[in-house]
Length: 72
Image 1: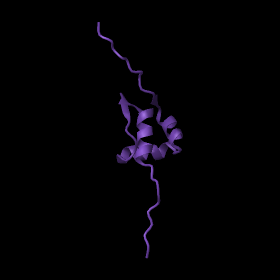
Image 2 (image 1 turned 60 degrees about the horizontal axis):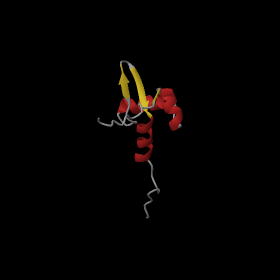
Image 3 (image 1 turned 135 degrees about the vertical axis):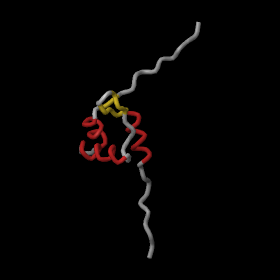
Image 4 (image 1 turned 30 degrees about the vertical axis):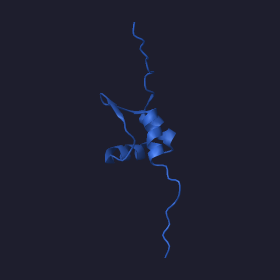
């Protein structure tokens, strides 16, 4: 008998919920999606959803530790 580890289903958020989680206006999130610069998303038919893990990855990838300054 083979043991199978079943993973839990992804937590999918509506665009308004994802925008709230990121501290963005829903239209800003839609603009980022349209420009290809936002977090990865899922299309289920015509519905757009965001995986909570993808939002965490997006935040992590866009986290900056210091501001770069140029000396003159």
